[in-house]
Amino acid sequence: MSRRAMARVSMAMIARKAGVSRNTVSLALRGSPRISVATREKVRRIAEELGYARNPVVAQLLVELRRNGTAGCQRALALLNGSRGRRALAENGPEHVWGRACRERAEAQGYGCDEFWLDDPELDGGRLNRIFEARGIVGGVIVASVPDRVLPERFMPTWEKFPCVVAGGRTRRPALPFCWVDHHQVVLEAVRKVMDLGYKRPALVVDQAIDDMLDGRFSSAMWRAQQALPAKNRIASFMARPARGEGEAAFLEWMERNEPDVLLTLHVDLHDLLVRSGRRIPEDIGLVLLDKHAAQADWAGIDQHHDAAAGAAVDLLISMIHNHQTGIPEFPRATLIGGTWSPGWTVRPQS
Image (cartoon, rainbow, N blue to C red; front, side):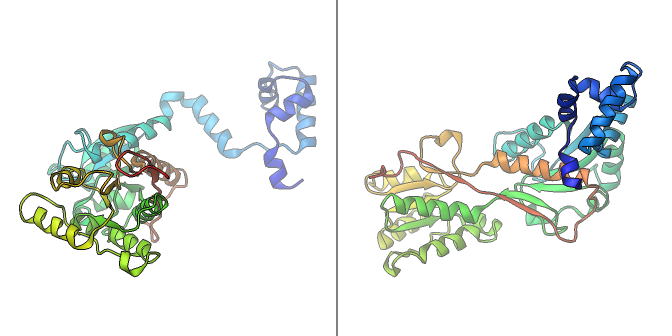
């Protein structure tokens, strides 16, 4: 019998054929004196006929559980706050969303979580490693955007010894595995949806600094999506955050010159600016958020599923732990989570 066929044979299958319970099969295969000799022999004979083979990994885990009890197998993950603010993971904001989702996923997988701040002046790689070992921490998730994408050099001993994954960002020194949102797909999906609604002249309004942080994935996706439009309907993006004063005046001048019929943006305050300029939403112009949050639940836009991306980071880390993958990888793995369209009142209804 092939290994694949053997792998499909379970204790439940043996139990059904032998006419006994699954627990009886388990005890019989271990030679427990609680099961009669006749039943043990019958179960073993049927197991051989079906080609049953014990899973050595599961068997070893059960041995460890029986030897040490549940507490002996407790493990923890580190939540490493990579932002400038010590309380970024606790305060209301994007880092809090990512940190909370990472913690929830880790706990659902049976891991505890300990939080550390990478800007803590009293912390370095050597001390962090000793804390990890003392607390049974087996890996870390670096949460929040890391300034300049460069992790503090003093933590190199930690990156070299423990598996670590970045959630909600990407690092270049060192380059570690990461899980993030597929920002390119977010824009493509938003453009596709507004075109389905009948809009002809979509335009992007995003702060240049944010697009730079994303390696230009918003602006490049917008350029790509516009290639499907007639040349006369391709509008150059407004790469700044409109604000009162000169920024607002520049934005309104851009609006008058280009006449977009729907705007794709991250900036919620754009709504009030448009209203002050005398434009009605959605009658005169549509407004689409590229990252919807609960406060704008009834607006049209894209749900970036930060919680799913954070969970994927924890899953990736646990996979690395199970596969004994430590140190800085030669080829860092990237996991991107796609966004989904969420309808709302800020665009015209489907005709």
